[in-house]
Image (cartoon, rainbow over the protein chains, first blue to last red):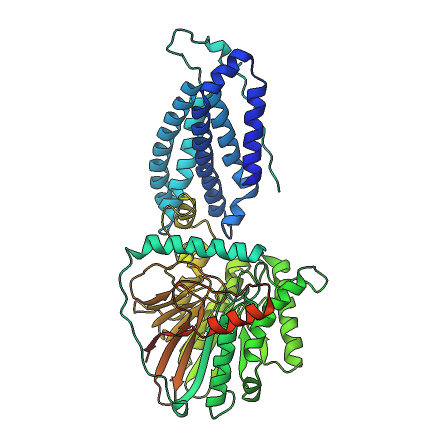
Length: 177
Length: 393
């Protein structure tokens, strides 16, 4: 947890330090959004990590306890947290859209996963496994669409779609094995 | 300082869980029966699981159990009538390392604390037997040869202690699933199984053999009461059984359990295959008791009838402490350090006694000052008592 906090703080400071003065002022105004983005991103990453673990278990590779869920499997938590924080700091509208798309993807993925899980596997845990995998997949797809699709800002200073990808999003993470 | 901090964290977590749960759990009626007269008894069976974090100088429960074993050794008129089962996870967190490993001294001290329970003067004179069943942590939570090596380390240490006069041994033998049969007197058959083998390394063909052996052992028990003992419980109202609040671990632990992704939970496919195989083996002659540990508390649950064991016992409170919820058929639950004692009468009656600390805790005496620690040990040991007792048959 300490490593995660250190990494997130370092990335945030790095992102802020690399910003131009007018960007810095904007980012300072967005600190609440950055914090919210970091929290939502980490939680979303947690559920994506769950779907990976559940998918592995369906293939016969189990974890023994929650400790086994750490390591590389927890990478989505870090990636999600950092991404959410940076997007919140630089583009709160994009963050909001990412959350909305991610939530919609989760709901849709859970529904499809539950149905498919009951069809594919036997046992009381089948629907849960299907739902968990579907939720993670839906969240990943929805969040990615919300994050990377061009965004037309409504304040009249919208960026051309071609420049949307030029936004600076510093992402750094460390995975310890 | 790691242990006290960890203990405090566990205690705090448990307190929060229990506080949150306590309002919703149904009340279970109290039950107390008088202690049997020793002259009426044929066999006494002690059961303690998950004691692999206990030390003889810091965990009063080990001292209480040793005193209880000594007392009954003294009271019983005949020899070899007392068995002490350690129900797995005898060495946390990853079994007994090699003698050359820096972790060996700590690991071996934990195992020695359990050996000492059956190492009293009267226990040795009366031929008390201490039997150690492997648990998943004794396998080092690993499949294959590494796990079997850890079991061999534990087995070798127990053999050394046996050679020195301590009545201890590991059963089933390292890396073998069992069931191993122990017939005691005319009334009792104990079947010992390494359920961690099933979860970690068993091949389907070998599992078929285990199923057939288990079926044969329960079917030809005749008039004997059958007690099946393994590390993994048949059912549980605690975290491995899926009884946890949704918000535990931000919902992640709950989802992993429900999805069957945690091997050690009853919802995983290997665990479910184990209980299904046992149910098939018990189809014609369900055992009287299925005793396990794994979840760190004390539970007494009625079987659901059919092929299920008549009573399901969880005695995994040797050194750790987890919250416990409720499942249908539950007679007793207690989330504190303790152990169980089954008393088999000559006339066929069977009584169960649960001995534990009061409240919901696993008291430890960790004062660095030896005198203060000893005072704490004596004071705390005196708090232990029979918290539940019932006639099972």
